[in-house]
Length: 96
Length: 280
Image (spheres, rainbow over the protein chains, first blue to last red):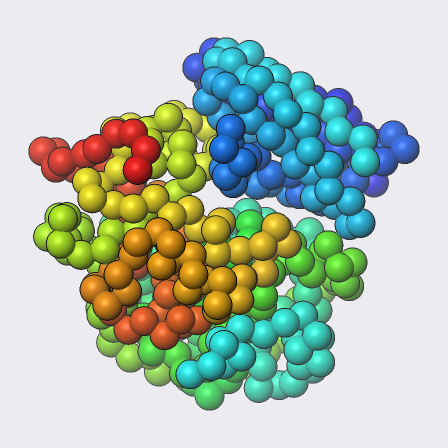
């Protein structure tokens, strides 16, 4: 296992200017955590969920607006509220 | 039919890992997840390579399904337990597909890969693949009472239950795909007129396990779905709606429920059909 990386996975081939990206990494004491990250809309409804990568990273392609990013890992659930915009990469580092 | 006939928990699977008549099958949206690790003795079915016709947009035919299951070492009288990532979306899709071709005893692992991982249960290295002797599997003709086509959906507008199980943002037209996928798509956003938006996620707990039958019944009643009427569930490509089909048809025992696997990627690309935007 290599160490944790900040930011999301590689964006090669993605039309970044047209996407509304929310990305980040999940760490515990600086080390990447294997688990899941869930995206909830402004009403708290599930929109998507991804497993973290081996380096703890995750990414969503959302729409502009307010979202909640929820990390689900063994023994912990952590929420972060973010505001995303088109053409930008909203970074969400989550320490559990 | 009871809930335990179609849904098993992790303890049950753990106790049957060496049972030769129980075949655990992983079906993931990320078809490479199995290569990383998987439940011991589980075989893989690749929803893209194994379950889709390589040329047309359709399923493999009856002979193709027979060849697939024979090669995987699955016999007609085996108990098949499906599990996968992403809250069992594609495992539910495979469940529906197995029922479409008439497999007798097929079940889902409640919570799928996520619940198994969050419980810190053992997974073996991806290279550790079980050896199962080939069988001579016999499938039945497709049971199309479980499968809706585009004309069924058009005919259902305003008369039957149409349940759109995508997220509210996909339903309203803000997003074209679940938000873990890039949004570059060719079809129009929105939903089928008269569809109710009841996201698949309302069927499940955060850990991916299904809610109780009482909670599920209350959910559909509260959403105003008259289950006495015929119901068609759809999503984007038919995998999340297979999960809702599983809930309505298998857990709640509603016979008159179909899954529309063409779903929004087909409907949203049709010329001239009605589309609605906005929330319910």
